[in-house]
Length: 109
Image 1 (cartoon, one colour):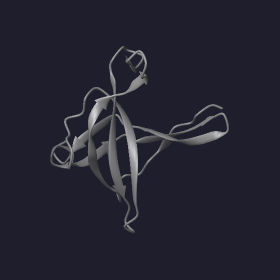
Image 2 (cartoon, helix red, strand yellow):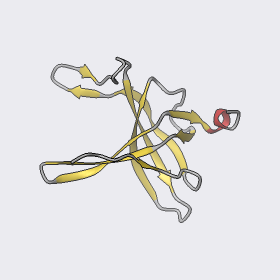
Image 3 (cartoon, helix red, strand yellow):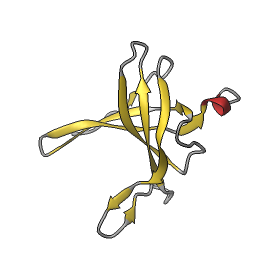
Image 4 (cartoon, rainbow, N blue to C red):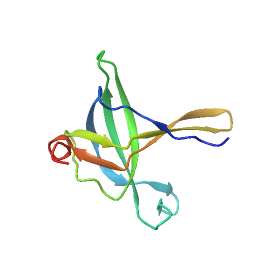
């Protein structure tokens, strides 16, 4: 199954960092850290996403390099994409962003 990136419109979402960014571990036994095609460390950030109707989901977003955000920060997810995946009959959506910025900094960009 080839995964086609699906752009996510974040204009009506409130995104809050709920767990500090950390390097994504590929193998818990060896401690291998995920890197992108250029060898940069991929981080994962757990955020809460609230839509305009008050529904809230916890989501992990992958990003290259450590983003300048911390727990409790309102976040602007720049270039957020969803990728549908399927493995052994299970499926889900993986999220990736080009940048995760605190809302106060994103307003300056």
